[in-house]
Amino acid sequence: MGATGRRRTPTDGHRSGHESEAANMGSPGTGGRGPAHTLDLLWGTVRPGRRGPRGGLSVEAVVRAAMDLADAEGLAAVSMRRVAESLDVTTMSLYRYVPGKDDLCDLMLDAASGTPDTADWPDDWRGALEHLARDMRALFRRRPWVLEIPISGPPLGPNNLAWMEAGLAAMRDTALDTGERIRLLMLLTGHVRSEGQRDLSMERAGARTGVAPREWGRVYGEMLGRVLADERFPTLARHVREGMFDSPPNADPEEDFEAGLALLLDGVEALLARRAAAGDDEGPATG
Image (cartoon, rainbow, N blue to C red; front, side):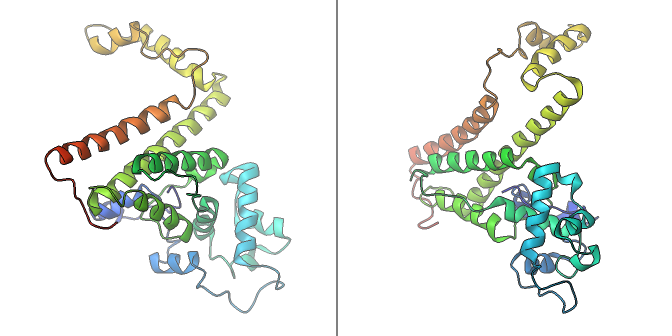
């Protein structure tokens, strides 16, 4: 799922196809130390040095304090200094547990992701993936700061891998091959993340301009109507006149998310139906 990120490096544009797809799900950053270090940090195999503050402090306590700060004030408020102040320790003492801000964000985002509760998910692949998408969206709504860290590679943390496991398990009885399954999972989580980022941007724009998020469509249509010329943008101009961007006052803010989710999964159903009709519906024996 949308998990963690880091500053991009000159080699970021040269990842393999599957690495690029997995990046949509969210991955830990490197903090300048490489993925092996990040993996150790996320799985708790990195041991703090011997010097440091009183024994009550731990990686978990540092991460918890940082998450509390992000919940209260947003990700921009999180710094090693602010976290140290909230724990009543020196800033330098935190580096015994977490090497830096990028590493702290890796840990925060995996912790914030939690693990999916699949107990009430239906057995069919579509129903299960719908639940996964909605549960992930609910997480982003609760903690929008999760969306503020760019992702840069495949997920490595235990919680984010639990979401991947749940998504792949939902498709185990389908005729999709392994490559198609991971691509679908990346598309699905990419849709959830994109919609969440758009919602966050619209809410911030609303706070800045005084225009409510659900009113932006109407306002946008009115602005376009003032500048569009039929001879230059004939199709767009016609659609604007027909009310393409008008939204009813009681419009459901979840409508766009659900419409996109349905279109995505409808396409998968159509693919599986074509394969079944062609007699190619056995698919992989196990998932």
